[in-house]
Image 1 (tube, helix red, strand yellow):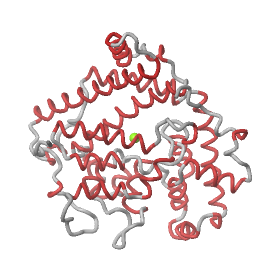
Image 2 (cartoon, rainbow, N blue to C red):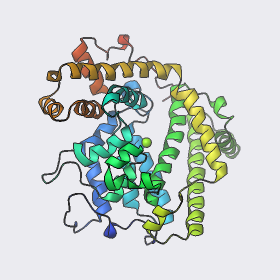
Image 3 (cartoon, helix red, strand yellow):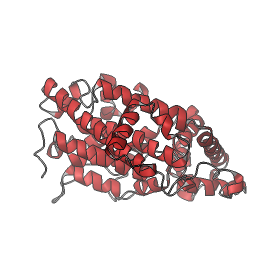
Amino acid sequence: MNAPRADYAADPARSRGRRVPEPPAPTRSEFQRDRDRIIHSTAFRRLEYKTQVFVNHEGDLFRTRLTHSIEVAQIARSVSRCLRLDEDLVEAIALAHDLGHTPFGHAGQDALDACMKPWGGFEHNLQSLRVVDELEQRYAAFDGLNLCFETREGILKHCSAANARRLGELGERFLARRQPSLEAQVANLADEIAYNNHDIDDGLRSGLVRLDALDSLALFGRHRAAAQAAHPELEGRRLVHETIRRMIDELVTDLIGETGRRIADARVRSIDEVRAAPPLAAFTDRIRAQSAELKRFLFTQLYRHERVSAVMDRARTIVEELFAWYRADPGLLPVEHRERVEAIGERAIADYIAGMTDRFAVREHSRLSGVDWSDPGAGLLGGASEAAP
Ligand code: MG
């Protein structure tokens, strides 16, 4: 049974509304409706074929942006239920938070940002908002998904002052240094819990990260020791799963406890008081430090691993060359995108490339270059492969 929503939670009946007003749905709350629109979007289905850390076709068991987003939503909903937040809003934010990601993860985003430097750059978080506000074309009455203010506020996690001024009411909080709803704050930390843990799992699976190296990290070492003490015969993948399960449990429990304490101390009674208070969703200092240690480890040992970097260098080249070719000859683009280039210039090329899945980008690059990059001999597939079933 769900407990009644707390007074500091977002209330779908008191939403700040949609950009294009719509009559209320008879059977669903406004935030349920947002969540459902996100799940039915084209951008959401594309997440299945976009890189989280490992390029989509490197192995069937690695996380993709889709499974990552579902894990984030699961963690965020668990935290929300305990804190009596609006579960539908937190789920909508979690499922939408990566919709703007380019193919090939951060390498793709950095390459596209460099290409777009003269025209305002490219930022995947801002692009997620652009997807739900403009790029999805499904509804007769408006462009985008016409989501509620609270969902859009949660999707926009960070923003430069220049972009904040351009974004109007959604950008105000960045200029006034105010917080978003607790649902948005929780979704953000659920993202961190999800990727830290699943990247350890995927790093071990790929063989690029070693179990004994992880033992030096307080969080991992503690839970691996506890898992082994409770089950001395445990080994291999099952020991990894048991350790990670315990880590996620501690992080989630710590987040619920510390956030609950901060909410009580701040005595917030409404979403407006949440927005005016300091950040309320947080880990304890000890767990925050241990989580940061893990993040630093993944950064140097996995994200910067030479085998990951080699694949990402290739990915960067694909994005840069696609951008250059479309810019030199918009006739290479499908007709609707060609028309958008005439209307809004280079941003339309960035939108098109950002929407691509990993494999579509590889195929498109092969088509235009005549080089078959999907051929293992061409190197793009020569990255990590699953070391264990
Ligand atoms: Mg994410």
